[in-house]
View 1 (cartoon, rainbow, N blue to C red):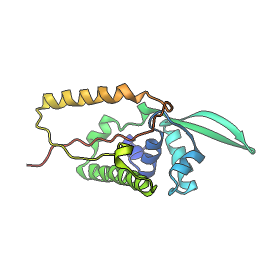
View 2: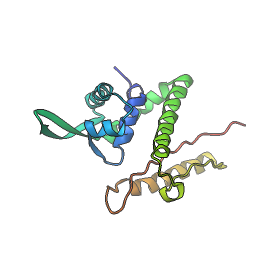
View 3: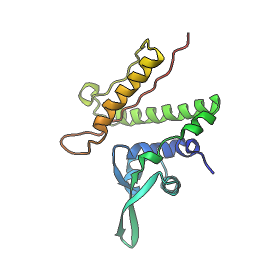
View 4: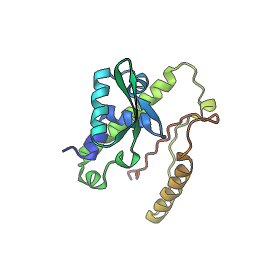
Amino acid sequence: MKTTADLLLHPVRLRIVQALLGDRRMTTAALAAELSDVSTATLYRHVATLTDAGVLEVVDEQRVRGAVERTYALRLSAAQVAEEDLLAMSPEDHRRAFMGFVAGLLADFDRYTGRGDVDLRRDGVGYRHAALWLSDEELAEFAADLRRVVEARAGHGPGDGRVRRIFTTVLMPSTP
């Protein structure tokens, strides 16, 4: 039996989950177009794995030229690494997971910059480091504030001039 960490931190499955974030519903063909560097057979295998694990759910089925085309949605509650799995991971497991996370982020940025029409200001793209001196209590308050800000906007759907944007955070103590 795979742990949620084993299931979700695989590079291809992580990208599938990320593609469906923001209440997106996609067919395997739409996922294949978005993850064009992943072979069709590999994509189908990982979609099946995530569906069998309850991370993806089939929200629609259409007959297309004799085949059934399924539309998938993310079950956000199932798309999170369980606390007990995180606690059981070794430092090396965390390094590998973080490397997969960063590699996915780099791939997203490569796809963005590779599209040709790149304007960081227009597109609202930014990346920066900030150092904050926070007690444990202040850190908990900061995290709660940030969670409220994101949750207030997480329910927005497509339309009204909205562009799907990826928001990524990494928070860790610095070394002395």
